[in-house]
Image (cartoon, rainbow, N blue to C red; front, side):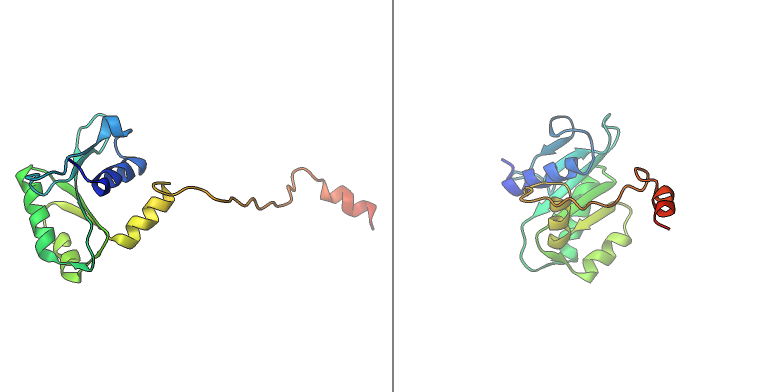
Amino acid sequence: MPTFFEKLVVELIVAMGYGGSIKEAGQAIGKTGDEGIDGIIKEDLLGLDAIYLQAKKWEGTIGRPEIQKFAGALQGQRAKKGIFISTGKFSNDAVEYTKNIDAKIVLIDGNQLAEYMIEHNIGVRDVKKYIIKSINSDYFDFGEFLSQHD
C-alpha cells in the first residue's frame, strides 16, 4: 500500500504537468518488494515514456549509495528517467553521481519539494490574496489632461 508521502509525490508531479491527471498519468506503487520504485508517471498524455519515482522521508543527508540503488532499480525496469524526492538533502557525492550515469535522475530535496508544493498548490491553500492596482494609461488621455492644466 503506498504511503501518504508517495501519493503526495505522485500528485505533485502530475500537478507540474506530467501526464494529465492522477487517474491517467500517476500511479503510486510503493510497497514491500517494490524494488526501489515508489511511483510511475507517464511523461506525456499518450504514455510514450515513463518517469519512475522514488520518495523518501529522510532526515539528514542522502548519500550516493541510495542514489545508486535507485539507478539500479531504473536499470531493472529498462528506464532512462527517474526522480528521487526526499524530505532530506543530498550529498555532493550523490549529486555528482547523477551527472555521470546514463539514466537521467533528477534530485528534489526537502526545500525544493516545499517550493514546488507551494507553487503548484499541493497541501497548501490561499489564506489571503492581495491585489495591487496601477493606473491604466490606455483609459486616460493624459495629453488632453495636461493641455487643460497649462
